[in-house]
Image (cartoon, rainbow, N blue to C red):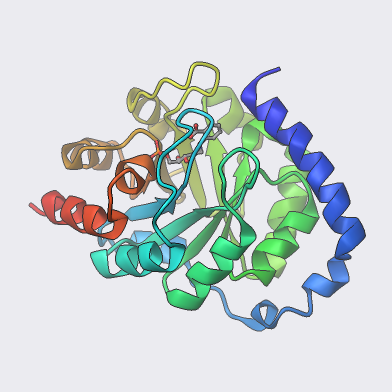
Length: 261
Ligand SMILES: O=C(O)c1ccccc1NCC(=O)[C@H](O)[C@H](O)COP(=O)(O)O
């Protein structure tokens, strides 16, 4: 069983339990359900840094990244560093994140927030809205095309944008549907955990022109951004490189300054 299959197995158990404890209609009572979303795709379009800075405590490829930084400090740091948005990992079991982290990030900042989660059920989309997300991630590798259509429709009705994540050409071909605002190419091979920015460059020309391209994972040098921009990318999702620092917000600020021409 590969890592995504393990995560999905765990996720199915968690969702069944959550649904029995908090029925979906209760999520709709969250005051955040009325909040108008803040568009990440527009923020990325308006040039700026293009950085989507991630809050990530640990991961299957790196068991200890940062156990000490409070999410409110990191969120405020990323926003004042000039990031276009923030990605918050909400998976508890494999990444040490939580929905509470998302809620705290929301209460601290105004910029767009991505719920970084392994979404396999509509319930998780309602949760994302109820906890202040502006964008959800849909991972092609764990979803049928039908589910991507249904989830995109539900997200749209709630004012949430979609970042569709692909790892290769076949996934892009099968999973991309109109209505998706952003496509993210994940540079991390989830079987070996190796990262290669060449994956982004290879897949970029196949992504429809009108869609915002995001390069995800393994970015640690400001010079890499120049290269990825040339390949057509407007967004750059960076987690480990910032979070491994003592002060992720300061690290992000230095990185964004170093990107300036
Ligand atoms: O990061 C992992 O080890 C991982 C393993 C299995 C599924 C997903 C995983 N990461 C999620 C991500 O997409 C990254 O957190 C994100 O792109 C940022 O990557 P990085 O800058 O390399 O931390």
